[in-house]
Structure formats: structure tokens, C-alpha cells
Length: 101
Picture (tube, rainbow, N blue to C red):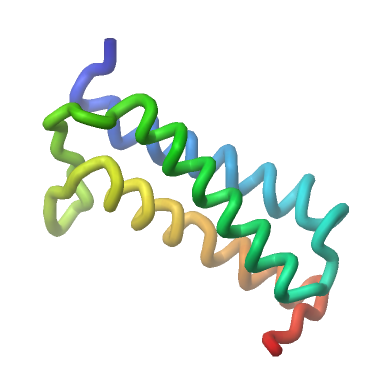
């Protein structure tokens, strides 16, 4: 069903869609400037990413190219989610004056 050269792009696409939905649709309505709510909602969003990726790649011996090394779907999903999310999180926290408490 999936071609090896498309697996990385599939996970990156899933993560991008989840991060964009979270930071532009969900968080502004339900989180605001509350750091605790941001953290809880972000754990949920990243868990959704892992659930979707896991439902596709669980039990398959597929290696993912993370540029400097290869890894499995789980670590690739976490790594790419974090890389995609960081600039959006920084922008969101600045825009909504989220204070870490």
C-alpha cells in the first residue's frame, strides 16, 4: 500500500496537519494563554499523531530516514512532530503571552 519513499512524507504530512489544526484552530479557541491547558492539549495532539502513525506502521519493519540516522516509525514521528511544532509553539506563546508557571 505504501511505497518506501513516501513513508517519511506521510508521517511529516500527518504531523503538519495536526500541528496546523492545533495551533490555528483548536488552541486559540480552547487554550488561550493558559500554559497548563496548552501542555495537556499538546500531549493529546502528539498522541493522536502517534496513534495515526502507529495504526499505519505498527509491526512493519520499515526504516525511516531522519537525515543523519535511520529509525522506526515511533521515533521518526516524535522527532518530526517536535521539529514541526517548535516554531508554531514559539509563535503561539509570544502572540498569546503564555507564561510558563
